[in-house]
Image 1 (cartoon, rainbow, N blue to C red):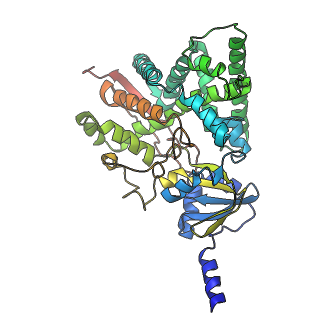
Image 2: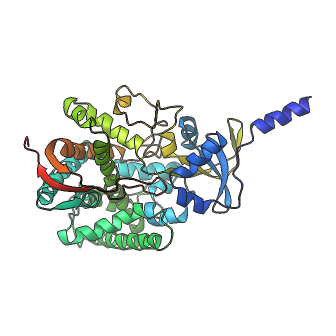
Image 3: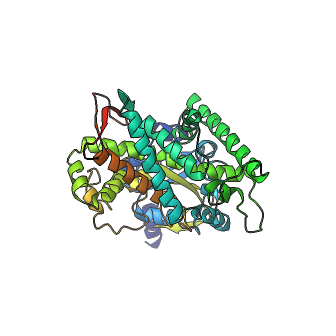
Length: 428
């Protein structure tokens, strides 16, 4: 009887497993649906599959996120697939580090997130929106996503201390955007993305080297200067390649906010009653922005490796096992979110969620954990952009395909949202 009881317990703790030799291609093709589809099939927030020829564990939900971001249980080093490192993160970036190395690098990044620096970034963004609005009002129509990428690229370079010449804007926008548009691409598009990243790295490396050789000077309070002359715990300057990667980790995410701003515009179109609420209630823009980040897709999942053997909820996690946490799925988890398929900003009015339940840009703590250091920048830049879309400009959306496909990473409306007849609002 005791033997049979043990067998039942063992059976109950057997992790649901997807059959097959490898599902890497399915992961790239199914995008945001990959983990969700299998979670629903197995009726479980955890299951086992095979990625890159090896066993992998996939998880969804607040409880899973809390475990995933426990530094005693998981590590980032060696977890991200090479295609992600070569396009999105860069070699030896903060996202790939653990323990003291991660803490030291995160401190460097957070050191430039001072109130003064952030205020400067917001003012630059407002000014660039004003200038862009002047330009757009002279055009028959614009592709909003492409224009906002350029707008944010200008802002990002100016903020780090290296304002772009107008002739370089399109080129640098393309190079930065390729880093987040191509990691999941299959075939030539992915390799083009790698090439663009290499070009951007070369330009920044030359800039850092020239600064250190005093061939060019930047104000001491700029991000470029602070990173170029930052010293590690042994008192040594970081190597040029590492500084370059982290400078790009400041530039690229700002341009990537264009995805969220595009979805903000789509939400205004899909849910037209929201516009009046945004105009009527002072605190509503923050709720709206948070709901855009929860409701629409951004980054699908994050990866880590099991640091050492442990058991969670009766499931065995073996050292070295690749583990994916579903960000999009967690933000749509019906166990946490009431009617997760509805766009309802008011859900954030009294929201007191944990750092593991709402994770569009990662979970955990900003300083010690792997939550995105630029999350507050994302929120504030989205609020500024929303103010222009709601209060400072008028426009029309011609007939177009506004559908977005959750099989694509990143997911962007097919038309990238075409706007026409853009003018300044009469009240401004």
